[in-house]
Length: 235
Image (cartoon, rainbow, N blue to C red; front, side):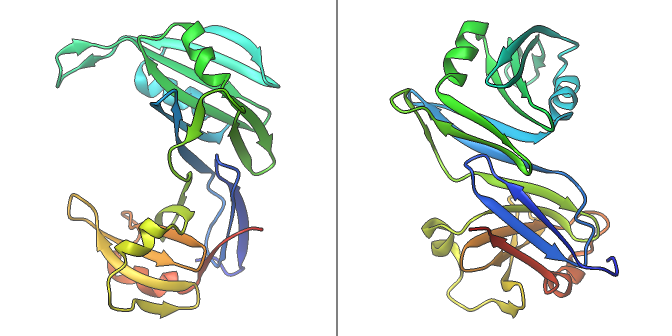
């Protein structure tokens, strides 16, 4: 951990802001993920730093973006790839759409969609870029709505991968009957992922933070470290 306390604010795609503070290296960028229902069909949006779209494009095999359009105060890039799915044994028609602003980007993927189809989905949302991230909101009467609260995902060296979201009734129902470990940052519970790996949940009156230990953060050290982390909703 660093000697001085750091504080950062990240904005989730549904407009919420979360503040993190503590004696950690909090300089890594954050990303936000949001599921949006557009005319009853789910689409996953991801927002992050300006270079995120290019990184994802390289990862999914989009060699270049075929189209570039001025859109809602930024630049909309559309690229295509045809990856082979080993499970279905089919070649997929993947379309990657990236909205790039001054400091942040927003991306989503489609299958078998035309550019007109991509725009038909994006036009149901109003995109806004802020100093601490991107937010979207459904255009009134356009047929889109949020399927669930957005999350913010952030890697903190020496601690792990954090996924922050607002505390919901569904979260509260999953808490064990017994009380968790009381820390200065909230109530701490130990859990495990679907693959059996350990994880931790830090619950406060307004946030729910899942912490997945990484290679540089042994699980037995996490409870002691989380006592020095503060996570809260802003406003």
